[in-house]
Image (tube, rainbow, N blue to C red; front, side, top):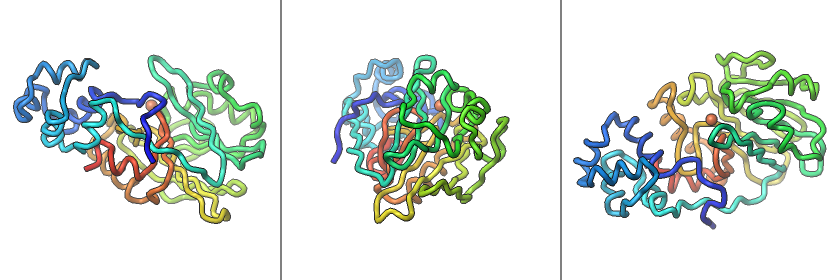
Length: 282
Ligand SMILES: [Fe+2]
């Protein structure tokens, strides 16, 4: 079952078009010409004043190799996000204002327990404290998706405050107090198993993490996707367009369809939803 996003999506139509034009190496004039759409309408969309109909968006999707169903949904403010089903553990999204946006970190733990593991740290310990669930008293591990100010602030302070034994960062990233975790490496914290995937593109050193509870009968998995996959979009390819989109396709093809995706920005989604609708998945 899907519904409209209750939290704002990270990217609007204009952001997706800009990212897609950068990926394709095409100017707005060329896209307008090839798609047979007035240039002014493309510029308005980029300026957050979209007035593009689905027919026009379908032609633009063809030129930019985007998912036309998802692009049309985004353009009409109808991008669907799925109902998130139960997982065999509890997830606390920690949404922290940063600059003009919001960055997400996540606590994951056994429901009812005061222990958890933390994925990303937001801008730092003060921002985390403002959204911290009072029931969580102990951190068993911290995992960073990438080392950027809005996702990795205050790692050492957090390690110290909670006496965290294990703080992991992507291999090749530089952060004091963290040690590198590479592709396929798994760390077990009580009933939770966390597997790292090396997913460069947004930055050279970027990890996604798949969280499972192997002993639970059935139950889904959670993918912490950092700035690789967003509901309805993808992260900015600061390091490599090609690698980002290769990794995005790889991760969506690797995890089970029902996997819940927890992105660094915007609402939760699922692998199934993004395979169907994400504009960057064709
Ligand atoms: Fe980010």
